[in-house]
Amino acid sequence: MKIHKVKARLSKFNLKKKDQLAWKIAEISSDNAKLDSESIEMVINRIIDNASVAIASLNRKAVISSREMALKHPKKNGATLFGVSSKLKFECEWAAWSNSTAVRELDFHDTFLAADYSHPGDNIPPILSVAQQKKMSGIDLLRGIITAYEVQVNLVKGICLHKHKIDHIAHLGPSVAAGLGAMLKLSTETIYQAIQQSLHTTISTRQSRKGEISSWKAFAPAHAGKLAIEAVDRAMRGEKSPSPIYEGEDSVIARILDGKNTIYKVPLPKINQTKKAILETYTKEYSAEYQSQALIDIAKKLNKKITRLNKIKKIDIYTSHHTHYVIGSGANDPQKMDPNASRETLDHSITYIFAVALEDADWHHINSYTKKRSNRKSTIKIWKSIKTYEDKKWTKKYHNSNPKNKSFGAKVVVTMSDGRKIIEQLEKADAHPYGLRPFKRANYIKKFLILTNGILDKKESHRFIKDVQNLKKIKAGRLDKLNIIVKRSLIKKNLRKGIF
Image 1: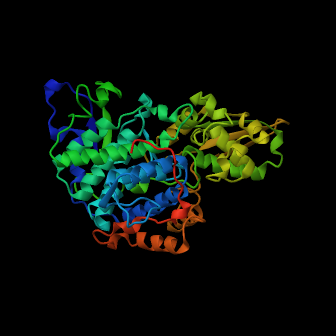
Image 2: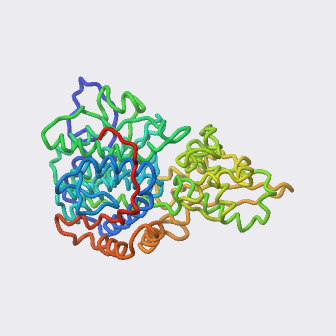
Image 3: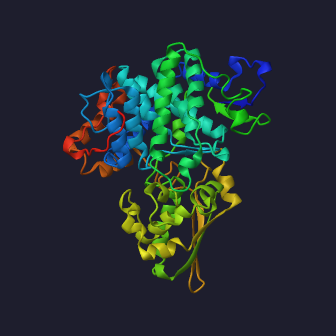
């Protein structure tokens, strides 16, 4: 890996292309690096993972709306929509819009956390949609996805957006553009222009994840993917972009991030170096924000230790800066303590999540979020007794550059009414790659079977699992095999009309 120093510069210095971050990303996207076998297998895992949560969310409101929009944009020889017959094809950017929303809706796919936050699996739907429309092969798709993961993971390592309340999809636009460029074998110049347009058009604030969180949280990455597809299309037609988008005098760094005096250090592989960043990412065992994964495991363990939950006086959670300030008490969001808050809000409330997991010794992607469940009196009592605190030790562990030592856990101190304290802590979620029981292919398939049970025909389920595991051998023009078809009678519609 090579560390690239990136900073804003005055226009009069006329920074050369070869010294710009967007160009360096484009170079590694247009190289001819050998595909890593472990990375290939992990891509297959993540396609299965995405399909699991997408099918499970097919009849949720946001997904229905996104699908209805996509259905209005048919295209012969286009791309497929999750759940819809593969004989029907749609414009790839609209298929990406709908499929990305389905993947993101339940907050239940993969994650990568470093200087910033991300869900790298968001790269897969737009790249797959374009691959289907452009008649690409399985190997082409793998190259695109592996490249997109490489770019997003390394941008997340090097550039913090959250500090300035910019949503993390600003790293997703460039990574999708880079992945599309790699898959389509575009020139470095074309990818460079597309990356810059993608970043320029995907800057938005984190209000989408603050206060009463709405369905836009699911639409946001879909929007970024759609914009990236359009940016690549324009770049392929020879259109140029705002440049240099990272280092310019009025660029993202200069005007939105840390400003002209800051140097960002972004790691990237050397040209033709094998890309393995996808192996540093991790999926979710539970449908909730990633920082809650280890805390759900802690809650389940405490459930076995505490026989009388009604005797709990208070619960103190000592954790990292991110957990405390984004999903904990430090967020200062009263909505995170509201039993009638939206599902999107509750899955970003560690106090709610911990209370339910402690009572139930379990977590369910639907049942744990129902209004009946969130309004249970015993739950509210525990919920209101919980406070989080930033502990610098946990923040330091969170930012550890060694994946084996990086921690997203916490220490929990439960004080009982008699003064007795029960303490439990965990460095990593059990399902983390370096956790107690890391997710393997069998776990991804099990998750798929659980989430699609009652929705997907067993024959179609078996067919998909077989085809996706044969991804390397899927020939050009046959990637519709990665679509999943659900009986038409099981797919709900939104009767409210829009513009399309």
